[in-house]
Length: 74
Image 1 (cartoon, one colour):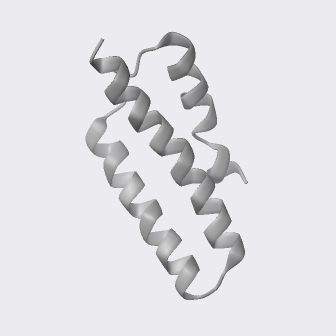
Image 2 (image 1 turned 135 degrees about the vertical axis):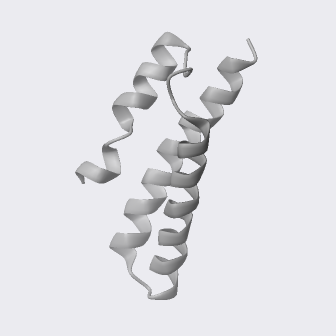
């Protein structure tokens, strides 16, 4: 549960401040690729806990990535 929601405070902070300059784009992309790998693995072995936890993690991090890109253009 902790690793799944670990990025929620970062997402909240990013949305509140409308800044994501302190977040490394490369690290974020690498992490998202890793989470996607876990999603594929969870699907392949039919593990709902792995699949759901990583889908939530993916959505949180994708939201941070979109925010970073969006706010950096302003």
